[in-house]
Image (tube, rainbow, N blue to C red; front, side, top):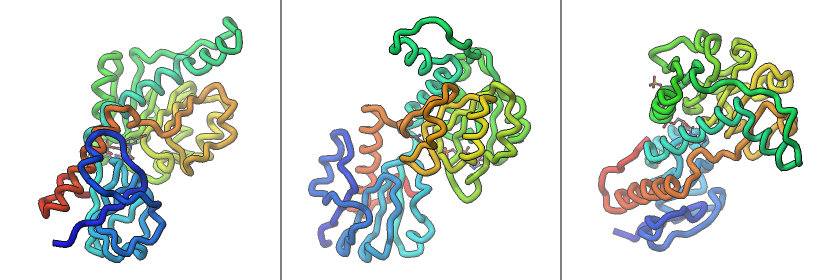
Length: 285
Ligand code: NAP
């Protein structure tokens, strides 16, 4: 068997990476006529640039920017990294809930500016009603954490829970569905209007799940608060949000801990090595 040529769009962290041996580092949009395996971080792949491609190993559980149907049609397998980032992403969702409702970022800015008093009171997290939209791996990890905060959980999945009822009833809504044709714009302007005054929306899933302009309008009005890790057109953050005290912003860091990023690399490497050995792929999508 001819040696397998592996390209990655960047070097990924952790000790497992070196097990791949020689890896070409190049952007996804550079022609790769002899590339067999491409490792990406949810970047789109133009298959016309990769006539020899047989595997796209995605360093992310979300693969919304990869055209999986087109890849499969061309006989190219796609893998992702489910499971190993649930705790880290659920932790960030909790951090954003706490930060947005308890004024952590605003208070930090106040203290740094030499201030102390004049703080606007926050809202309870303990005992709050929590809507979890997408009770999969990460949503379930959030539900387990919510139990420790004495929260009442209202879950929504395809087969259970009425999204509109949950939006009306919840003090906090946290999003954990994948971005797909089905979920793009799921949290529409009309649905955002269902949120209670003073409710908090947390998004660590994907920006495109929410009507971003409608969310900006709600936040500018001051009616709700939010904690946002993801945006519709990253790395662009709507400028209107930058000076608002009622939104906490993070730069898509849901899985970004040293431990989890290393574990994600382990999963990517295991998938590439399985492909090289002709074994079943552990995490096909
Ligand atoms: P998962 O285990 O596949 O869970 C997804 C859940 O969403 C499932 O329970 C599914 O319901 C539900 N769902 C799908 N479409 C729905 C719809 N239209 N209405 C209601 N529920 C729907 O996925 P996961 O591993 O938890 O990851 C979720 C997403 O988090 C990823 O796709 C990714 O975009 C995002 N993420 C972000 C970061 C970050 O850095 N911010 C890190 C990791 C992941 P059923 O049970 O009915 O199928």
